[in-house]
Image 1: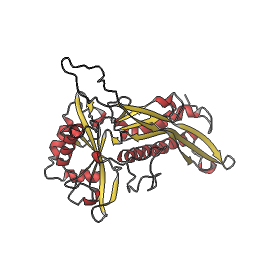
Image 2: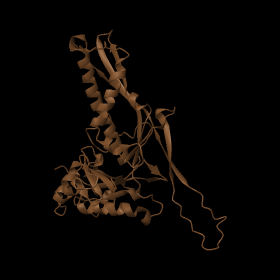
Image 3: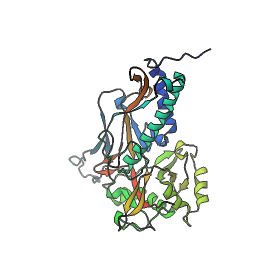
Image 4: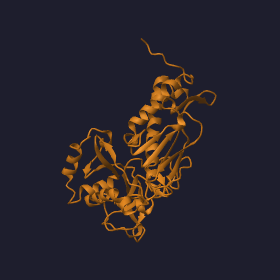
Length: 363
């Protein structure tokens, strides 16, 4: 049976092609394996705005009780401790991208092929755009990454979700460095640094009660953190004489829950930390005493490190508008969605992420 092809600009085209853009974008997205609806995810997706009007979602963190107890016959009345909550919010806004598919002479291909090409290119664009936005948001910085199309070097965030630089309790440096200006070429990503991060995460509130615990995600009964590093940091770790790279890889393949998406594409595992790498990890070129050393910001992640929200239901998440210009001669296609992403922060402190800055020279 021949396939029915709707003419260009037909209103019914959106019902078929809009969901396909979403499907393609989610399939290609690096961050999608870390995103989920419940709080046992690195990035929690909030759906309140998919049915309600508005452009922002507020969410709370209940603070742990800290007061004294009443012992024996000591009166407990009048000693009640008030429940305390810290609040944060995420804002959504529309983001769109248009493409020209050429004039009639260059559109001798059938309409179906044009739509497929538009779907593929736009889904690819939004995959990179959203992934890079998440990297910047979770890092709290734009960095110098030159391949971040659509983001000027002075970009500060989407939809009013301004980038939040890491607070001092959630920023760790490689090696013996304690600040950006004393980082040296020896302060690289190492096995020792990864083990240090795991220990630090488990002790955060014990060391400072004002910090919330950095909670690991639970995978098939096991608890794990995630460390996403740059390819340059990965090179430093792999060439670290004390790393034991074979054992790192073996630990991930034999771990409980190794089939979970959170392990997908991983490099290996050290202690309870699943290792990942990606080319879009934020990079800098102004570290060290001379303000000229290259550095990268890895992300050490637990649950609810970030929050993501959409303004439309999943089946209608991407708009798909077919139109013409130049008196009908030029076919154009517009695609977009309403979304926002933010790093979770309560009481002025990051919640589920520690930034890890190390020296990271080009190999």
